[in-house]
Amino acid sequence: MLRHLQRSLRAIHYSPIIGRDAACNPIPLHRFWDSHIEHATRDFSTSTRLTGHPIYQQNELEPTTPVKDTDIIIDRIRKSTRKLEEGPVGKNLSSAEKRKFLVNTLLSLEDSREAVYGTLDAWVAFEQDFPLASLKQALSVLEKEEQWHRIVQVIKWMLSKGQGNTMRTYELLACALEKDNRAEEAHRIWQNKVGHDLHSVPWRFCRLMLAIYYRNNRLDRLVKLFKELEACGRKPPSKDIVRKVEDAYETLGLLEDKKVLLDKYKDLYNKPSRDDRKKGSKSKKIESDKPSDGDSKESKMETSENLEDRCFPVDAKPDASA
Image 1: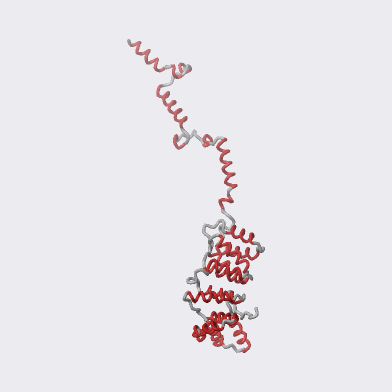
Image 2: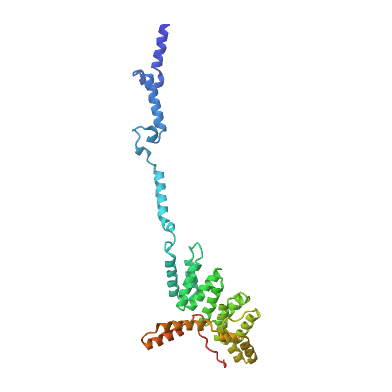
């Protein structure tokens, strides 16, 4: 029985599972299991952080060829779309610089509706909100430069976009149309867009249209508009309006209507108008300065008396024969 036990132990030490060569070089059992555990750990490890063994170097984790090709493709795509990521030209410009660029472009454009509309479309293409304030300031610059035809083009483009639909916009449009020798078109704008509700139209706009009719010798329209304003219970705020209607009555031969008009608004003739008050205040200011040279004083007086609003110049009395 003792011999049988010794043969069993010897069979365990020289087990055939470890290979044919192991019979010549017996390996202790504990070293056999350590080697298998280390081999299993090495097979399933992908990082030195998990194993902590110095045998694993970085070159074992280098990507294969397909991964490298993918990185190259992604890098090319990024380079090709870099300009799109940066945004359109002028994205980083301030609003003042954009407005200056717009005004300079509008002043230098050829007299073409398509060119103006295309420029304005490109200017607002990348704006999140419609730049109405910048366009109004640009229109103010164009008004100072007396670019009336260009003002008409810009305002009509704004209205086609559904923007700037205000009394001030239509007022500037009517003024620019008359300055551009298109008084009849200004009359159509008034009739179709503004004149249907005379209760809410500011007197400034009404005064402009009366002046347009007066300067273009459309006295019948002037008288009609004035009577419509009276029917709405609106009284003229200054005597210059009454004088235009008075001249229209006299030219048209309506002497009775002229007499009624003068009796109705005679208090306005005793009251200084706004223009008279402006001239008086400026004259007093010039007199208070009292320069030593009399000629310079006279020149200052002439300059102060010739200041007029761009859209409301001094109206000449229309020719009765016309």
